[in-house]
Length: 76
Image (cartoon, rainbow, N blue to C red):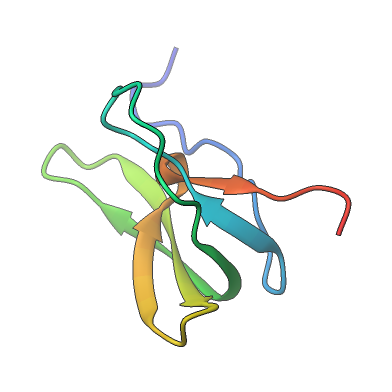
């Protein structure tokens, strides 16, 4: 099995997402929702590629988030 296999892209431009609690805490966090406006891949120090998404949040801030830290909002 090849070592550096790129996992499929989960989201596309225009999808509405929220940021997951990636710290494993049971503490409830307020979910920020936002819209994806860009996507790119980055390589880590070992050469594996990962998807990163540019997100315009509803409070008008913009961030770049890894694919594993956001979740798709269904039924909008």
